Amino acid sequence: MSDTSSHPLDDPRTDPFGVAATAAADIARITGVERHDIALTLGSGWGKAADLIGETTASFPATEVTGFSAPALAGHVGTLRSVKTPKGKNVLVIGARTHYYEGHGVRRVVHSVRTAAASGARTMVLTNGAGGIKAQWNPGQPVLISDHINLTGDSPLEGATFIDLTDLYSTRLRDIARRVDPTLDEGVYCQFRGPQYETPAEVRMAKTIGGHIVGMSTALEAIAARQAGMEILGFSLITNMAAGIQTTPLSHQEVIDAGREAEPVISSLLARVIGEL
Image 1 (cartoon, rainbow, N blue to C red):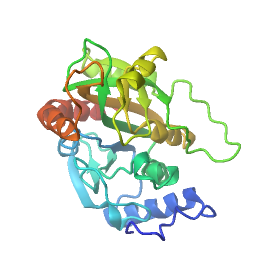
Image 2 (cartoon, helix red, strand yellow; image 1 turned 90 degrees about the vertical axis):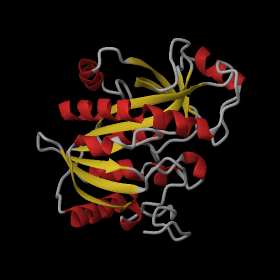
Image 3 (cartoon, rainbow, N blue to C red; image 1 turned 180 degrees about the vertical axis):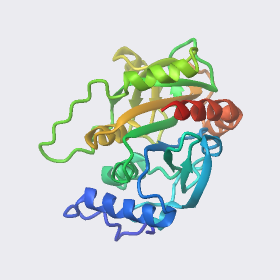
Image 4 (tube, helix red, strand yellow; image 1 turned 180 degrees about the horizontal axis):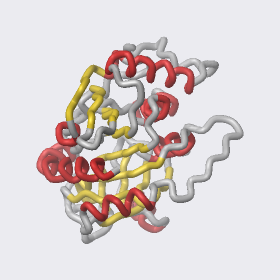
């Protein structure tokens, strides 16, 4: 399904869950896997994890699946994979993320999550590259997301849909991750609208209201995953220190470079964590 003006999720009369069910049927047909157990969205720097989780049984362009678009961001691979872990679990690896700042609407941002749920996944692992606020963190460091602050002013929930977000980023799953790597720190993720990087004043605001990580993804996806009944684990790769903490100008190339340098270590970590889920 190409990224055109006739995209099925752009019509407000369309049922987004029906589109997700169609997409899940596409994935089952292409992969031959009727049901996936875990879904993993790969953010900047996390791409190599897909090679380490287990045996890739199918890999294909995301655009072959209803409702998916080609990624607009360098550092995202644009493919979907079905991977079987050594313990026999099927993992749907999502390498095509639609960001909120692309302007396509929230339905398309969370379509991959809803498709994963329709594919049977009960666990959603969300990863990203982000800016760090805690002074003790360093670029290239992975951290767990303990909670989030949604600063987009938007939501994937439509109408009078009330969803409890207590323990949104599962304590149980974070405990499993810390058993794999006891050195993992954690923090509160703030999703800004983007695509501009945050100003130093905005970073100070995020810190004042309880944030430790700043980025442009994940929170809206996590809300949709909770609505779908999934248990959520979130990881951020600290690709740079946030504006005002880092004294040099921010750039997307810096994000890509930090992700490339950290990729072997964080991908191994993520694969080990998924092996325990």
